[in-house]
Amino acid sequence: MVRPALRSRSFKRVWRRTPGGRTVIHYERRKKYVVRCFICGAEINGIPREGAVMRGSKTFKRPERLFGGVLCPSCLALAIKSVIRSS
Image 1 (tube, rainbow, N blue to C red):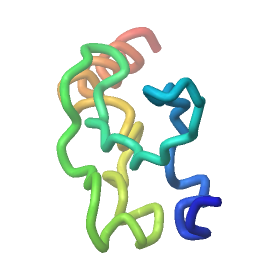
Image 2 (tube, rainbow, N blue to C red):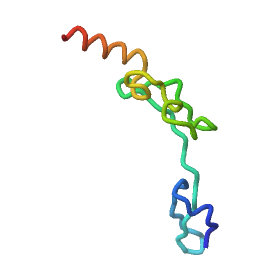
Image 3 (tube, helix red, strand yellow):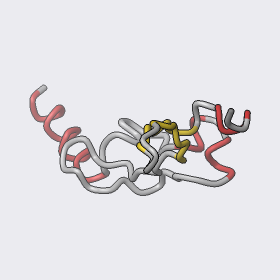
Image 4 (spheres, rainbow, N blue to C red):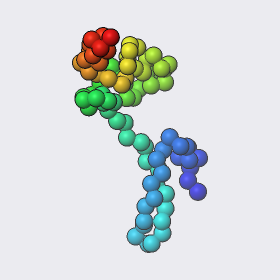
């Protein structure tokens, strides 16, 4: 049996085939990914991926503005301009 600390769902479970023919589960850490803009795909700054900030509240984890953590500032400016111009 694997260590109880590794049975957490914070680890990714990967099925591996051993040279002896058995299938076993390996527990791997999940990859930290870069948050990207929904429209243009640019990397969004100001969002931490590790460290003590990730244990903080939601407002510490992302920019606290309209579409914070979803759109980059340039795409947000274009979206706001298009909404204002259409009204």
